[in-house]
Image 1 (cartoon, rainbow over the protein chains, first blue to last red):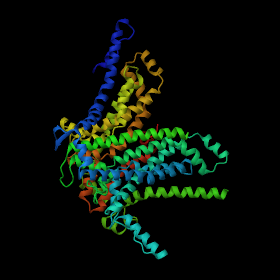
Image 2 (tube, each protein chain N blue to C red; image 1 turned 45 degrees about the horizontal axis):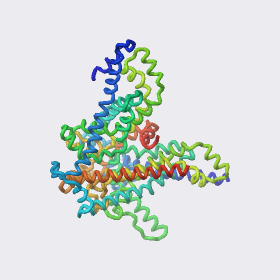
Image 3 (cartoon, each protein chain N blue to C red; image 1 turned 180 degrees about the vertical axis):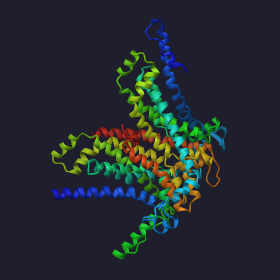
Image 4 (cartoon, helix red, strand yellow; image 1 turned 135 degrees about the vertical axis):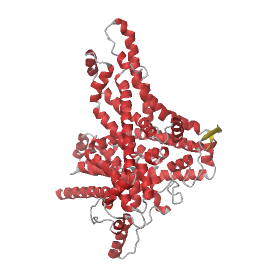
Length: 332
Length: 275
């Protein structure tokens, strides 16, 4: 295979070399295709299939015992305390997705609509808004963990100042500063907002690209017909933006259910306080590789959880993409 | 009417400036803090530092493993991208420029990877790497990132190669060029725009990845920057001056590169969401 290129140098003109030419072409194509296919098989396809197989076996630590059927799945879904953990983590992923749709993607849409009208400096704003997307989530997580520190963090210092301002202005005694990451009621929301801070620029740019791809005549025609800006946005931009909306909904969904870095770095592997920030990604990692507090690791249950997450994400994204795509057609 | 338009323009600019502040102010506060002492950060978190000395940066450079993490990240990221580009162009060239049986099937085989969240295959990957002796090695990470990046590379580059006119190779073939020469001398220079997109599409996620090093790297001297930051944050948890300097130092190269290549970064990172 290694002298494929040499073979191809055979003079192509003479009839006697026809078969040789075809063979050398096959060798050349194999030389090109085998290495990438091999890498992809070894490190993507085989592991993905193995996860399915592993989930059907009983494991002790990292050694495989006998065939176990669907026991691992049953344990996760129906036995306590696993069932409670599974539901708790799953519910938090749902909260993450819904909240991101509202606070991140809705704001992004507004920003994209504004930028789409080409205000002065729109190029500068695009570059600035997209900047956090390039920063590592780990870095962003630590940065905001320091900012959200209850004693010394800048967030509470700002909120203290704001509270005093309100008190002075309207005489109302308020204390807006909170131990944001330290109490169950606010920890998950704080993490989601940090995530939104990091990601906001992404849907903004995707929506903006969608808006920019709409032919100019459509807007002009609508305006000539006497439509105001709101009507143009509602009846021209929004329907034609449907493909971009589909992509962002699906990517947000997949991202929300693979959420790991930020809760790991800002809260911890156990989803503190009191599992209030636990999500499926953390739960999967704990099940597979053990808890901080020296818990047992279980490759069988971990694989079963991975398979459940994979199937859930796959089925929902495929069905939902279909539904959203048919909506695109309807709207257009 | 014109007064109303003026107020709309003002409102729009105010909204945009507000969001600009929301984005830049946290980065600004972080950068300023990296010049302060911990005491100064606690006492005066928002103001300018008393002096712009580089003590904190010198400390992280000389007394911590920060330079090591940085170097490791450079090795892993550049290794992964080189491998993605080489293997990606090989597959894309065969799929995009040659007619043969099974072409479409192979293309779909590679594309299937676009849908698979490789993180969920963590356990089999762990066992596999262990069997290959690639646990706790940069090469193991490079293989995983390359395999993970291959589907998007094949997708982007095949699409690009298919748009190039076939006269190019035919002319070179008539001139007696070998297939390899055609690939390297004729096609490769033309695919530059696609190579840039693929590089950036993978550069940022691989540079920033935390998940795979967390599981596969145990030795302190092999840790990449995101994983190293967690060590660093634990070691210096009370020394906020050092922490902010570390975070700033980790952010600076990315921000500088982004400011220079913002157009390519934006195009590259959204390439997956835009057709």
